[in-house]
Image 1 (tube, one colour):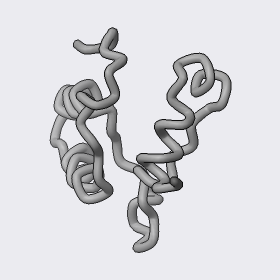
Image 2 (spheres, rainbow, N blue to C red):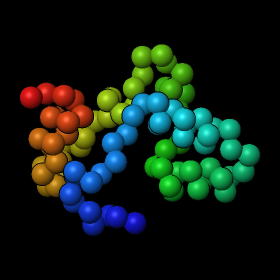
Image 3 (cartoon, rainbow, N blue to C red):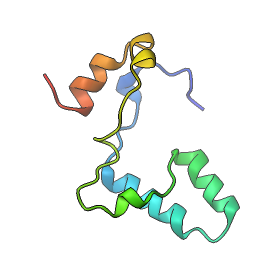
Image 4 (cartoon, one colour):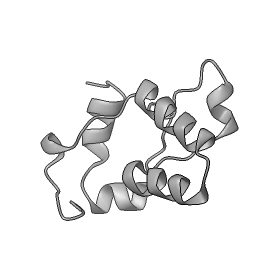
Length: 85
């Protein structure tokens, strides 16, 4: 568990494709225990929004402003995730 890791350079980047893959695995899991395992390991579960061809759960994520300012990650998110220079 790396909850104390504040070095954003070491965080693995997520992609819509990988998110979709894990969400589909969650949806197709045969047991509730397997669904819990996927959610615990990847922080992902299935949503019907994933059926929309234009939906990108990574790019369309909203950062809640209070915590973004508190953790000083707002600028990082704007530059890296949204691609704003």
